[in-house]
Image (cartoon, rainbow, N blue to C red; front, side):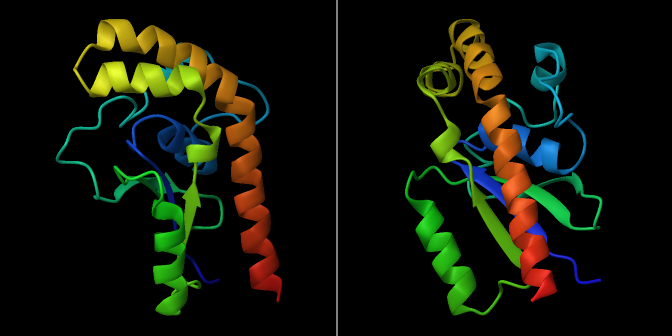
Length: 156
């Protein structure tokens, strides 16, 4: 079986991308939203430093043996660039970049900025908790769609 590297990314690589990657790697339930304590204790969740931006960090392996990663791009428009790079280099059979930015709601934006930007996690984390719980079902659907796309490509 051919395996690929699936890389979930967003601006900070600290919230939505981390949760999606852990769902994909089977470390979080996809049938129901887990307790917030389980989410906030994930490796990399709300722990990105300025040195982490642009680094692909491994989360685990999915049921098909694909390596699952997370990436903070520090750029809101990186999806097209990453996909274009992969297409131009004919690497679609080796890498899949999945953009979680469309699932970042207002709570996550404000909370993430407060927590990671001016280093005010006491203010930001309660907002992040609200935002990630609201986004969770959508992230589950994103992961399912990413898996369906992969399956269809393998079958072609």
